[in-house]
Length: 442
Image 1 (tube, rainbow, N blue to C red):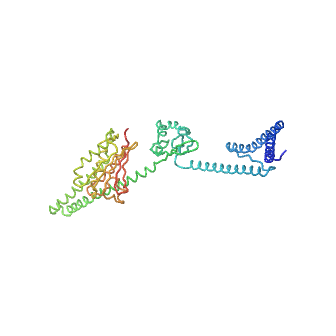
Image 2 (cartoon, helix red, strand yellow):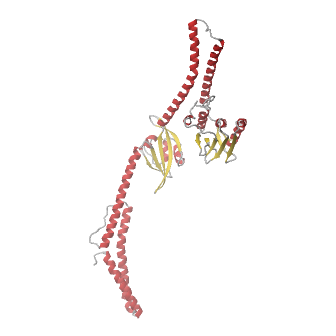
Image 3 (spheres, rainbow, N blue to C red):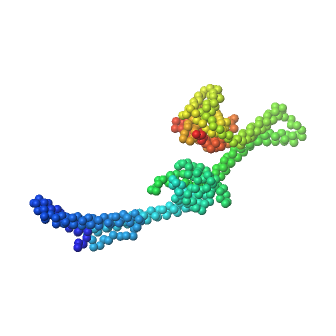
């Protein structure tokens, strides 16, 4: 009986070699009758060699099965074995220890990430392509007002449209929801990203309470508006107050009509009249800003509308020595919007471009994209000054002596009423561009 599998391999391998050599000699010399016992010896050696190799493979298969099942309690013996077998079993044990350490680190990282997931103020929902929820944190459950969420269909309890909305939202898109709890209603921004895991493609949905952010932006807007309105009203009221106070003092001192030259009296009343007229004009501008009607949406062709607007301003362009080019990647691009309001936006943008003193060329490009169209009004004049740029969309802010300062702010408001955008940017070659984006009708 041999001490180890290794020794058995050595012995049976030598016996097999000897038996094969003997078989060769017997067959060569014609001693066929003695070949039968040798065949039995060869068969026995092959069988024993297979058994020995199976012994080696058994440990490897056992190791793999244990690792697959997450069992790290085993340990291969390293005693009373040959040096070769001890080395192999020691290697197996080392592999097990390395993998066990890696498993512990994975478990610790998962625990750490779970703590972070439950601690953040952002709601997180991880779902697969079938709508099954694999992970959801406490913040998301509190925002949605649910006790349990295992499938997107359960969002019907919050709003009947939410399962479809969450399921159809594309990766990279975002939308705003209004969620209600027992205490309050608050706006939430919903964003979707994607991650590839071993179990398949997962979508990560994040919910952020943007109520405080919106309140801060709203407060900043009101402060800017009040500051501008205060400045305009005080500038208008100051000369009226000064002149009226001077005339009242003269009446009090003399007890009769002031003995002022007629020209001075006329000038005083003209100043009061023009100031009051300016104040009325300012108030009228404010009324226009606050009385934009709700859009009456109907399909219309955007390139055709742009061509009409440019046609109406041809004389103004000729007077300024400018040219206006209209480009489009489609002959007809239909949008579902209020044509009159969109016309007002394009007119405002075109007029602003025409009024740029050193502008020689204006381009209006209409682009049809996957699900939106963009209209870009660009001019090659001097770019907007950096100190003015942050205020261009503030109501009543203007750098023009005869401007009302509501053109861009009203235009952006109109775009928001259409779920669109109005943005400004400067291209690499120095063009000043105002870009409006609108959903497209298919």
